[in-house]
Length: 509
Image 1: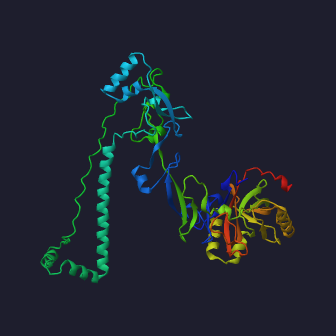
Image 2: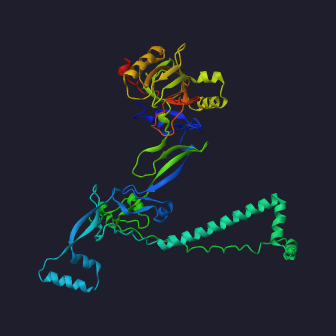
Image 3: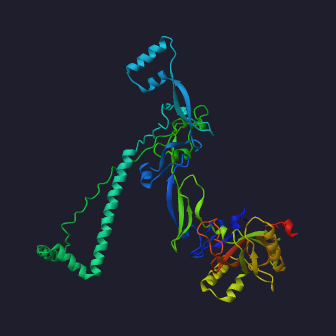
């Protein structure tokens, strides 16, 4: 099935003109239009750690450099590290944590006298997938939980110096833009010049300076405005003029071991240190992730809004196009012939919870109507650039199709499905089962040198009222609001011209 394996075979045209699969599109119930990811605005609702689900505020995430302080990733396989506890003697802890402490000599003497050494619990990080641990890099165990410190950056001073330099440049450029904008406004509005002159030169003290500036052809600057000093450039980077030659015995079998060196990905994950060997790897602090809501650019309404809690996977608003627009799938196509008409079978599936009255059109039928000029231009552009064949439906057949809601089948639905089946056109509809139907179409090649079979069709259906929250039913006794008819231009890629026939489904035999 193209919807399960090759989702790129059937594409719907967005309002911006791009072609996307239905599972990658959104549907705005206010504009009644399809929206791709370029037609929506992304807004971050919350930031949280994907391991411990700690939710942080935006300013706090910036302070932490968008990393969690308690969770770490494995530097070898990038899985989440697990904190493990073990018991160790107090003597070993004191030897590694104290220098010249009188309690240390006391513990050592106690051990030498033969008394039992007290134990203490310590913690280390380990990966449950690749078995990497902090003990592999000889990192000391921590006596407290979550006591791991971030790795020191040897180039931190250099980064801060460059950051401060670019902040000064950004401040200077912003002031220049504001000054240019103010001068442009003064040229367009002479009254503003007089007002600003009267406010800055109330007693006429700046008149001699103004005349002197006119004679010399210079520009006077307002004394009250103080310009920031020009940013002094940071210390220049040191360039290497000569690179030391590689030792001839570097790749010798006895001296060079590939398994002890890090990969490019492992080095780039730790940009500040860039470890060369695996014994220099350090646990990576977990990056924060976020929940995003998507807003329509045209009407400024939300099309996707998740719950603010990091632990919930539900949505407050979930308007994916797959839940509201009928989905087209490829059921069967024959061995392609360039000179003959090829018969194919398409299936249409209703994924919504409401009944849909659908109309099917070919491109020539839409062009002959000339109802929507913009829609006709989009069809002509697709015919000239993409299409290699013409898709038509049986003549003298009723193009109106009723699709059952996608609900669990029961006796009432079975009776309604039987009524729909009796009203179906036998020439067009070959199979029906609740929310799914199969229609017959004919494809004739229009380009003899085509290597792939591209066809297109148009579907039209009426949009009914949607509830505010997905999953809530319409209140009893209220009639749903009926919207306008909307049309969708669909591009179907049947594959290569040499592709063998798709087997006929057992239900259609």
